[in-house]
Image (cartoon, rainbow, N blue to C red):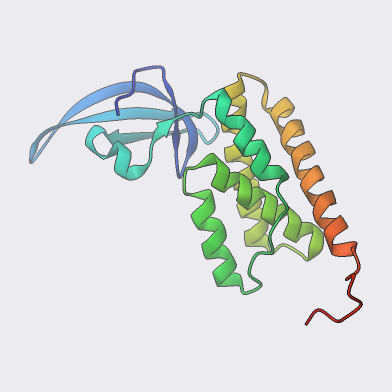
Length: 180
C-alpha cells in the first residue's frame, strides 16, 4: 500500500494525519524509505518506514460510504463493559487502538453507556475522550465537514442508542419471575 504526499491517513495510535513527505535515510543496513506524517491535532510528526506501514496499521481515511456502518455501530444497543478495571481497560484499549472506525465507535458507545449507567474512572474518561477525538476527526475528514458538525451527528446517534438501552432496562420481565 503506497501513499502520496498530501494524502490523509489514519495511524492507529495517533489518529488522523497527513503525509507531508517521503524521505530516504541511510542506515547501517542500507537506505530505508519513510513516510513523514504530520498530526495537527497533537502537533506531532512521525516517520513511518514504508515497509512497515501495513504492520503498524497506517491506512487511508475511511470512505464516506463506510460512515453509515459507523453510525449503525453507534446506534446499536450498548453493551456492559467488564466491572474489573484491568479487564475493562484491555477491552477498551484494544478497540481504540485497533485503527478500525467501527471498533472505535463501539468503544465510544459502550463507555458513554457506562458513564450513564454507572461511573467512569479517570482512565475511562481519558479513553472516552481519546476515542471520541479519533472518531470525530476521521468522520469529519471523510465527510469533509467541520468537527463540530460531526460531533453533533455522533452525539445524536449515541443518544438514540442510550435511549433504546434505557428502554430495555426499564422493561419489566413479562414472565413475572426473577431473572437470576
